[in-house]
Length: 159
Image (cartoon, rainbow, N blue to C red; front, side, top):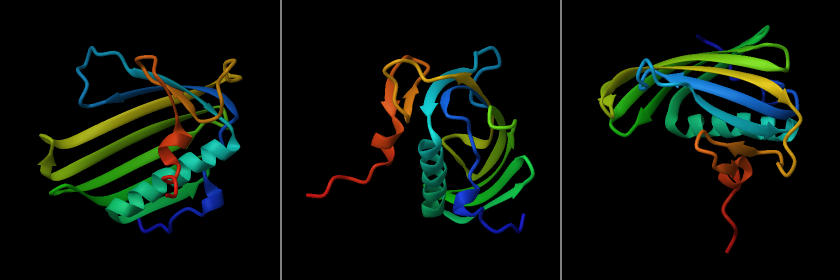
């Protein structure tokens, strides 16, 4: 892909509310269930999540291209993880503003944490309004812990 990075305003539009996310990786055993999380988002949180992921990639990667065509966001990255060079590709397919799927693959040279290749598959769907007491950015992990994305992406307090 020889694509220019997607413009900042070109982030995937997601309907505000509660999202259910199910993911599988090649590191999981075949009969392991998908990892399920929920997240409460609004437009500002969706925009922050997209910017945060791009910023993280730009800090580690010599190449990070995102191309938006129709209902798809296709990305390709060449990154350094420890002593390994990672080449990653993913396609996010939007299902309107109420769902998306992501199919991704990466290869590592030399192997990273014992992995030469990895795949990830994500399905997400809008499930309605956020639950009472939730605020935008709240993610409930598979083990029931709730964390807020804004605490992960916020700059450190000034001293």
